[in-house]
Image (tube, rainbow, N blue to C red; front, side, top):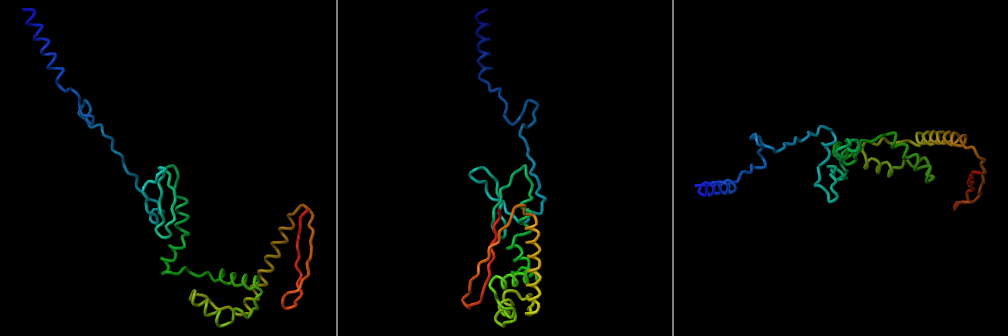
Length: 201
């Protein structure tokens, strides 16, 4: 009798061991799913309107690309979009598209560039009144306003006064002694030229 009971007990143990009692990994003992749901953060910055997301690079860094000039920037979760916003507001290719293929002309910058060219290359003031130059500037930008020789003369004198004052302020901050050397030479047109050189001691 005892032998029969022991055999029956061993048979029940074998049946229990052969039964799979493991639960699915995605379901806990209370019947609830153990999968975690992640929420995607909404991109609200204005900078994202001008950039496209790029695939993850080999070094594991996330990068974005400007839609206009194709310049790329590295994006980190702990940092904001300050660099992207700066580029979004200053991208020249974006400005060209917004203004119909041509950026707006700043007349003050235009006049200063001409003034620098006249001083640097020793052009006569009549340079700005020559028909070919005016046609060229008008072709490059229709908003360019022609300048007379009297106007450019005033601009040259104004730039000279400004740079002279800047030089005075710079020299006033120098604590050491200054040695000035003058070199006299003649140009190809036999004009006498004096070139000063300065050294700090």
